[in-house]
Image 1 (tube, rainbow, N blue to C red):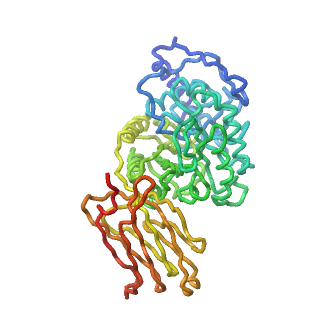
Image 2 (cartoon, helix red, strand yellow):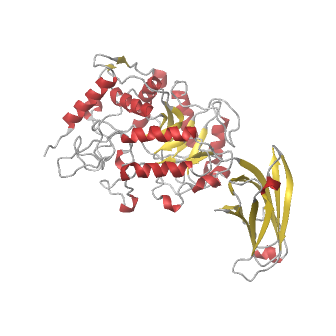
Image 3 (tube, rainbow, N blue to C red):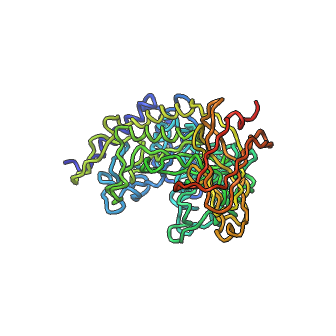
Length: 526
């Protein structure tokens, strides 16, 4: 058996580059990065290389992909990186369940990056979120090349700030200042004028994803949202501002951490809630779902329960369907990943029939072609951009109770999403949305003394039918009473449309009263 299937792969790379460039005589000069924009110059095999042409429609800056610039080879860099650990023997034997069409490559090679970005443009993806492991790291050294090639292909570069050794909240602020200083003036540096609840003004802001948000670095104890709040506020106050998207799906990372949005990176088991977390995100925060084509990291020893089969593209389709089917419009859809080969989540073309020469046959994308996920991505990006989203109306709910606990739920007639807690009593132990209902609690001793607590929350009403009836459930403990005020809102003004009180005790297991009102009574006048 051939131990080194690199020669045919290399020939394929040359053939692909020549075909896309309309002839091997076509070359493009890649200018070296300027000193002001470069931490460390990346080595390259030649100042002039044949690159695929720029063609097709412009990619979308609402579609992004996580990108890993950490791969290195002896031919380009003088050493292997990320293909060999732990104990593999590249170029034929690599740390992946799949084998790239381009072989075990270096992301310091302009031809490789150009082919990647040409493929991304073909797939309709306009943004890479590049893995970044701190100032001066290997991944930082790759940024100038990514920006220069990105400018050619219309691809923007955002940053995925990883939990490198020594990462802290203070260093996160310094890192973002560094990224602006080093790369912020480059045309391919991703910027947006879009706003969020904590960054409401316009301007041209960078976009930064923070991975493993619960751990400053993996040697430190877990932290809560409040740990990051001062830093996130400081980023918002920078001259360039900035949007920070946290790797979490709980709304308190927005409310208490002041992050601009949330992303999941990878949801391996959609049956465990899938993307339903979108419905709990505050209305001014970014919903950024991450979809995977599959997940396969058996060769590097991940638990078998982490394996997600691709099912010939069906897994990818279901991930997209659920991400777009929450009733919440994504600010950005992210794909996990373009080239995370270790975890087998890549959409980059994988070779068919490849083997390592040591008894292992690599997986492939059959029955899809090697580039099948590029075509599927183009289709789903198109569906995303042409999708319509359900109309919503903002309503205001004010709960007041003298019970130890009370809940308020929408039982039938519509749905609600994106709650925003405006106020809550300091004495309240809990005042939040929990799944599909609101919960307000106080210490039982306070309830026995007849004390009162309140919460006021805005929520978006969706999926109603004009002239229909809404059914609500008011649940509470056996102490005191609960009052609910429902208001319809227009702009900054809200008007009470219905008031309900529940002080009784039912024999059923749950002490809940069902109340009804016309949906039209809660809709603001046009």
